[in-house]
Image (cartoon, rainbow, N blue to C red; front, side, top):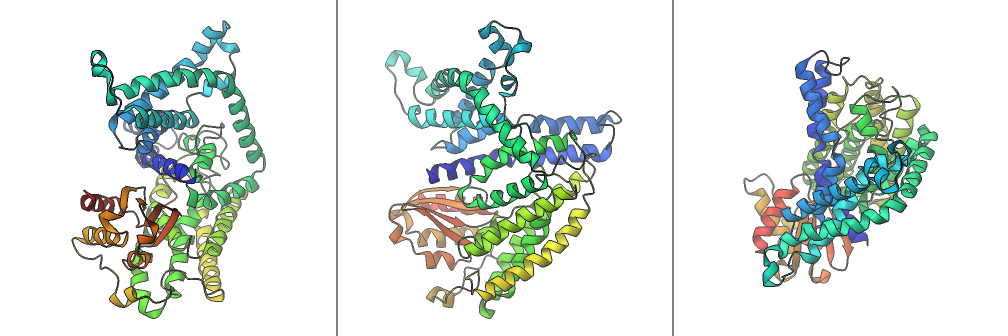
Length: 481
């Protein structure tokens, strides 16, 4: 089950990665016309509406992305089936169709059906489509129906499955919707405390990938909060809309880079150069783009106590920003790019105070991390016990063929073609399936300088590489042929 949810979390990263495009388009549009919403400039209107075309269709992106990511062969027919699934369920359960089925006026239809085109249904559609692909993509029909065999059968079976799903949702969706709304409203009523609790659990769930499920409740229009969509559309209340995003900026732009500096300063002298290379790249990624996994996975499993402290500080940051009504928003993550783009959004409230808060959090993160690492002798990067591989030195990543070399070393450490069964990746991690975990040489893999390793099952292991993971995965797949 854990592996399944991790795959789901990885699949969600594909559509989520599209959001920066919306942020850039809408941010530039609002920068040009910050008060007229495009009415004062045709260029601004063009950019704002172009960005809105992405934000407004997040559920469709989720349906397609999850279907593609969860299918075994990552095939285009799976993605098409995800779209088919979404169109079937949202058409059958639209307010107009439900009114016809119930024989009532459309105004009397349960409000839940007016929100059927949401992220939850998009994710569900993608899951159903991927299941149909994995089950029917290799089925051979009789000669008379041979044209519809294999991958062509998948969209057909997906549509049939969604008829059943739609019938079930017809009865249970209003109940689910009411529960989600109640949950969202309960957190919303807690104000700054609710934002803090959200921030804490958001970070705590990162290792499992379940943080995406939590994010969908607050960031997207699942429970009526839709914090990201409303912020970029400048809807809602100034100082409130964006409260589930703002507190991440001080942590991702300042706190975690400061934590990276603390880990560098506490590393063993002979390993400082290697750790410096890792932490400099990871710290820059966190500050500039808001991608924090390279830092977080560097100590998440090596020092769980430290990661718990990080989760608490993240919750505290969101609570403080919400308490003082400092708001800014992001389309992808809380880095410098999104911060600058959000400055001209009319509903942003005192966003520059988040930079002040960030400087304070940088000091807190640095000294608290340094104190805890030294006090409890935590084995953060550069503080591990010396091994034979350490004497040989880590793989140099400054060469032109660095990805090829890194992939070859990791592949060798995994046991090569005799042991590796499957290779996949998410935003920053290699997701690998092996035949025998005992055949994996973790010391050899760590000697390459990767941020960390996570064994998630008897046959499943993750290698945290960083934002260049796709290139390493591509090289490994070449070796695996």
